[in-house]
Structures are given as structure tokens and as C-alpha cells.
Image (cartoon, rainbow, N blue to C red; front, side, top):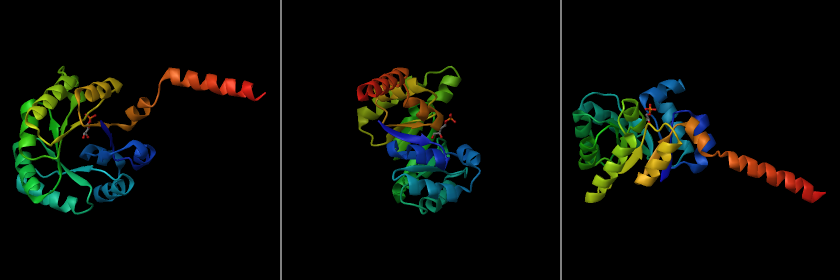
Amino acid sequence: MKLFLDTADVGEIKRYAHVLSGVTTNPTLIMKSGRDFKEVVNEICSIVDGPISAEVTAEDAVGMFREAKEISSWHKNIVIKIPMVEEGIKATCLCSDAGIKTNVTLVFSVPQALLAAVAGATFMSPFLGRLDDVGQDGVYLVKEIVKVYGNYGFPTEIIAASIRGPTHVIECAKAGAHIATIPPKLMAQLYNHPLTDIGIKQFMDDWERAKK
Ligand code: E4P
């Protein structure tokens, strides 16, 4: 499973760049960065050589496609994030025909995932954490989508999104999601285990003794 970072914070992206295959942003993350959209997306592209998702904000397919053409012209690695609504699926078809890579976002059901794949989306992002928040099972949705995509050999890659904890990462990897997009705070957690710390301390202490 590939790891993407879910942030527009370039400091965090630089910190984890060695393990990243891509980055996802959204309007909220751009707002939190406090920076200009184009400027920050271009800087992210200069740090990570992989798919960088940048979201459109128009509400109709023609407007979304117009934005997609503009944003994708900034850098070859930009992927256009398009919301999972009827107009968004139309825009995804237009992008697919025009060779523009897409990430259909805010997916919460198998039929939505199916529509994204049929429209030719490059990526599709089910939001696990937000489903869990309303008492549904995000991991179960990922498992179902993996099964359905597998039945038909859809090339659309599944980005497990709205990831909230290490268990989400483990379960999505077991389910066969292609990618997990992870917030920086969780990425830091993934490196750690108390037994690793105890083991390192013991080895260092013993090394000091061995040198005497
Ligand atoms: C994914 O592409 C989204 O940016 C993100 O995972 C949303 O996560 P949230 O539900 O924590 O905001």
C-alpha cells in the first residue's frame, strides 16, 4: 500500500517525503495552510514526485472542467479532486476524455465508488473516519469497494481517506486499498512502538558497557 500525506503543510510534507508516494489536499487544508492555493500546490509538487490532489470548487460540470484544465496545467503531477455529485461525475468523464487525472472525493457508498470508476476516475477516495463518525463502518466500505473493483478489473485506485488512527491503516492495508492518505499527526504515530524504544535503550546501554 502506498502512503500519501493528507495536508497542505509543506513542513510536514518535507519531513515525511522519504516515504511518500503522493499528497492530498482539500479546500479546508489549503485554508489551514494560510497560503495561496496555486503557490502551495506548486511547492508541494516540487517536494514530492507523485500524484498531488488539488480540488475544484465550481458547482457545475463545465465550471469544474474549466478549473481542472487550469489547475492541471500548473504541473504534470497534479490530480484534480472532484466531489462525488452528479455534476462531478460528468466533470470526471470530461477530464478522463481529456487525459486529465482525477480523484473523486467524498465517497461514502459502493454505488458512488462504482460511478467514479465507470466515469474513468484515476483515484477514488472513500472517507472512513467521517463514516465512523456517523455510526457506520468505514473499513467495511473499503472492503466492499475492493471486492467490486476486483470483480471488473477497474483501474481506478482506491485512496483510503479520512483516516483517523493506526487501526484504519492496518485494516485498509489488509483490505487491499491501493493507497492510504494519512494526516501528519498520525504519520508520526506510525513510526512508534514502545518496545522499539526499550530495545534501542538496551542496545545503547549495552554498547556503552561493551566499549569499556
Ligand atoms: C482526503 O483526501 C481528505 O482530504 C481527507 O482525508 C479528509 O479527512 P477528514 O475527514 O479528517 O477531514
